[in-house]
Image (cartoon, rainbow, N blue to C red; front, side):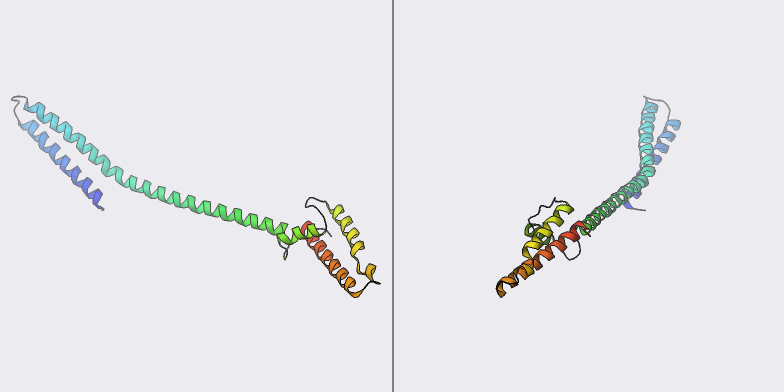
Length: 175
């Protein structure tokens, strides 16, 4: 039994003792100078104190259970909030993984769009048309008669164009 409950029990026993004493005095005393009225008042006051201590003795464990319940509920709410936040983060990361193909980064996608002179909102047909147009323009066979340096530059440009198109294809799920 903890200290507070012992103190409440001690007060309860003390109040009960005084109620019994004053009831005995009330019965035993002759009625001189209003002594029975005074005893009755003391009985009532100690009876109220007794009732109060009985209530505290009964109520104290309930309060302890309520405090423990409140603590458990706050812990439960914290755990639920953590679970919800983790689920949201997981869902957002899964969404980003779906939107972003493996091996590509956001800046790669933006660079690819810039390289092909496209907007992020362009549809699949526009993207394919633009790729075919740029492929014709930068195809290495077009520069076959030119110098070696211009052929290398054409090859590099064409490779960059193909890489950009493959990144956009992955991003837009174009087959």
